[in-house]
View 1 (cartoon, helix red, strand yellow):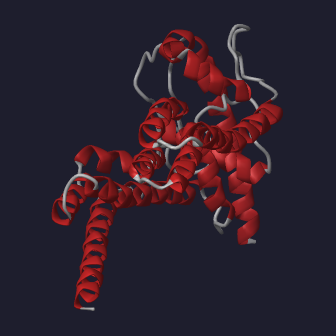
View 2: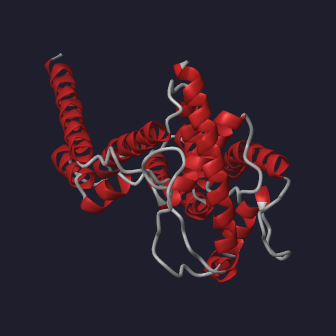
Length: 316
């Protein structure tokens, strides 16, 4: 009985310590929260995709549909938001990024526990939550925080000896692939780790079932994207694959991405936005990437006009 009470007290102490570390991580991030600065670069395009999905009621046409998992995640929260003001929606985006970045220490703690004791695991979790680069990235509102959370969670699940953990792990790989197409490459170490841990005769059958779980999550969503976009892209050359098929192209031809899409020429500039007092980021690029971004720039202004009209109607 005393041993049980001691273990229960130890678990409560660990949970309390993790809670304190999470609060410290959130406090550090919200202290630097840039409340008056719009999201730029990659985070901006995720915002546009999510906002257009919500306010137009369908997936946007003409956007390369790789790495849209973060936008889908954002759209779930944009739907329940009572505002159409772009800067407020960007605050939601940044907040979600901050929260995901902070709670990543939970699966990280369980990873550390596979190798060291509770105290060192808590110390490792603290170092992770205050890591300067991760803190700054969480403020950008880009897809990295969600991808990193899933990546750490996948490792934690695969270090668990239970079969069900591997099923959840393969499901998370599918979600990670939607967030960043590099996630698909995690299948290779995942298969190796499972085969090294599994010694029973049903291991191959179980592995096929796990891959099936990944497939039934990934394929329908990619198919839906292909149907919605119909592989249409703005001003793309004929040899470029777009739409839902782009997720396959990018995984296969990753190193050729910058060659195909052009090289960034100049820093960000900020033309006047017709909707809110801040600026809309404009990226000057060469080649296909430049033509694509000019079109997205135009689409973003149209979206902001639509958001402004919705906000005016809501206020009336």
